[in-house]
Amino acid sequence: MSRLIRLDESGHTTLAEWTAEDPEAIEAAVAAFREELDRGYFAMISTGEGHAEQVRELPVNADLVIMRLPISGG
Amino acid sequence: MAAEPLPELAAVHWRPRVDARRLDRSAMLWLATTLAHVVPFIAAGLVLIAVQPLALPVALVSFAHAWVIPELYAARGANVVRRKRSRAPADAEERALGLLGDLVGHEARELHARTGLMLERGRLGVWLVGPAGALLVRPGGRRVGCYCVGVNDPDLPTGDRIAHLLLALRADEQGFATVANLAFMGARWRLRRRLERPLRPALKAAAAVACDLDSRATA
Image (cartoon, rainbow over all chains, first blue to last red):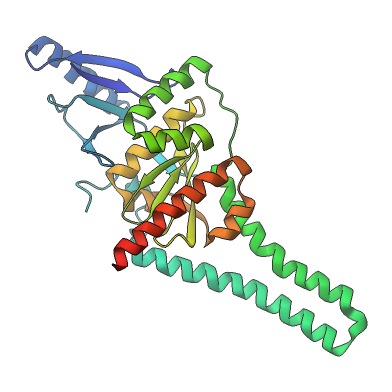
């Protein structure tokens, strides 16, 4: 089961869950993903120990997609 | 090389991208600045004593300035990881820590539980990531950069704030160092003195890893 989560005030919120064999769930996940991008979030996936990558399309095969806010120098 | 640069770089497009060479240059500039503050005060104190020994108290004040000014810079650096009370509810903190724990290994998780800082190995050195800033211990472990960087949502739990920084750091380390504001770069021993006591073991652990990086790099 793959998950799309957003880092937020609650710790994190699960926005969508899907499997590769469930097109409806994937469609819902893609819609949720795009909605978060439109809100200014960036999507990240882990790509091995100590590595992450920003993605612009929902990677359907990823186990976990994390939506994060922009960072800035303080 | 990162697959894609951090999108946040667009907000600081005038900054040159930070790499190891730029960090070395920054370290030299910080050293030169420190010497420019310290040497004149020490020289003035010595001259005062040589000209008029009765001016010893004034000379001591001059020596004190030579000591205090670099300490103030180091204190500014230490402030980037100073712990602050979280505004998030306890259950949100717990959820955030659970996710953060999933992103890192046992060693980093254990160090975070003790110190509140997350250790992350990078190509530029060893990072200690806190909720509102990060320390970069350069290979060799003698020099440390202190970066003020965070996510602009005061209601986020501490664990989430670290997760934001960790993900950005992992995606584009050089971009992360470019976006962040360098508050101090200098000797580890000087920074250690200004760090809150519970955070010092994290700096020690990062320095140990950074020493190892250095020996492997020169092997």
